[in-house]
Length: 296
Ligand SMILES: O=C(O)/C=C(\C=C(/O)C(=O)O)C(=O)O
View 1 (cartoon, rainbow, N blue to C red):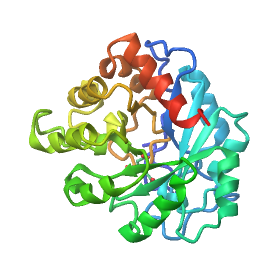
View 2: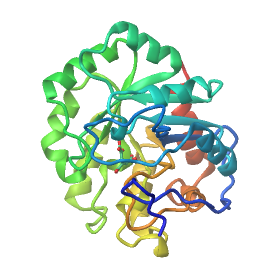
View 3: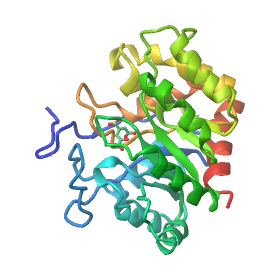
View 4: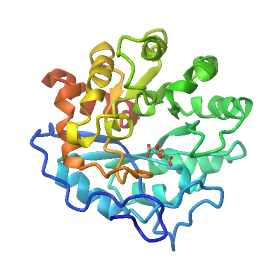
């Protein structure tokens, strides 16, 4: 077993395959994390899982091995609102990494300036109950009002069954919204079904809403042995419907994976299934993330 001592989930894949899909030059891994090192950047006391360390150098090594040029490093709940591990990576990235932070309502303007100078361009609102106790809507709304002035966006992570209750709050927010992992659709239901229709309506009726077509390994029922094929129709529908508002990410080091650990090279090889033309791949991997994270 690859369960890591003192972490409660699997260690990331130690020997991912070389992708057969050649990433276009300048491709961006738009959803990944760094964790710790725990003896330098402590984990949040309120965390709901304890990760193993996953360093910026290991992230850069994976970036180079898979053929990406840039990373967007997203603050994970295990570090709470202490963004220092992520900021440390941004400062060491020679401008090749941008960040999405988790912040509290009382954050100072000076600290927001520090985060922006390091390369942070958004904040994350996480509603996945097994991960975090979400802040109340009024607090999140006040955070949104502050960060919109900086032209930052909000990354939102929720499960599809919670979208109905979150919908009106999301559509009241003043920024670009970027949905993690398509809002985790229930792939046992039809891609034409009413559940996914609500998510597509969310994107169709709100041009400020983007989505990451990532994490088939978290969404799939079929699993790796069937190449997560049950996720493909959902991701392809989003990419083909909203080609200018989609992003892709590895989600390395894949926190909280317990059933199996995905092979990052195989995840990259799914990109042409989600984005079947070079034009769609250019938008997904380069144009969209560069516009959102490196245009200012
Ligand atoms: O890494 C992901 O995006 C997914 C997970 C964890 C987090 O996002 C987090 O801890 O912030 C998950 O589904 O457990």
